[in-house]
Image 1 (tube, rainbow, N blue to C red):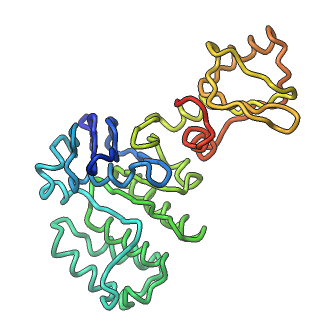
Image 2: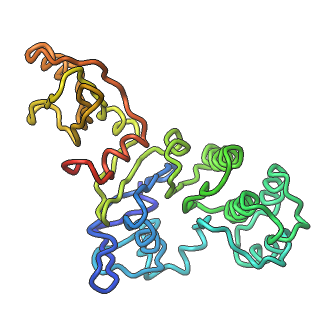
Image 3: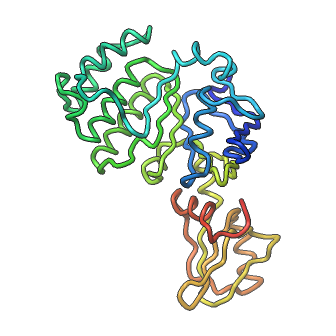
Length: 298
């Protein structure tokens, strides 16, 4: 099955600065891919390359098996984008935005737009500039999904939204995923919100894609281990650690390739004073991988 997105050794330069460095990954049809990274990690530059807005210095981006730069005009009919900052002429009414969009997309669905706006509780006669930040994001999402896209790119869609608005936005995306196999690429700082949504996670650090892995596989191999004594370091050839740091009177270690049987063997042989072994959330893993105080790259 052809990947919806395939980035092959993508490199993007701005002058002498490397924004994206040799990134390779794929997004499969009907899946949700979360592209994560700290500010300045290269997410925006990579997204622009994926959408054919920026020409790559090296490498190639394909959307639906076609070159994103060469065939951008045709491919964008199948793609919708919800930007980080929802923007439209403030004097335009919501219904006028829909009318304008309907003339641009052959597969526009007025019923899908109207029903979604109604669920959001937004009056179609409202002027865009009078809406709250959350309502503007909801309008942007309704416009994007009404084009009947095969791929939706959500660029930090929940930034600045309250808990209720974030939940509503994710529920709309999930509904379309289950209804018609929508493919989603999402960049976000809301790691708790995306953790149960994403099938696969990519993490950018300094322009390099340092992680590209199925979410559940990633979470299965990371553990936080706390020892009652200090210092404690596990054998380097057994369970790889990204960091070892002080924890109270003991030591905390982040392990990146945890294995229950191997760890039990080590604990018995070395009489390790283990106080706690705990799974890690996606947010905790992200901090361990991208934080300034972490050790070796994963």
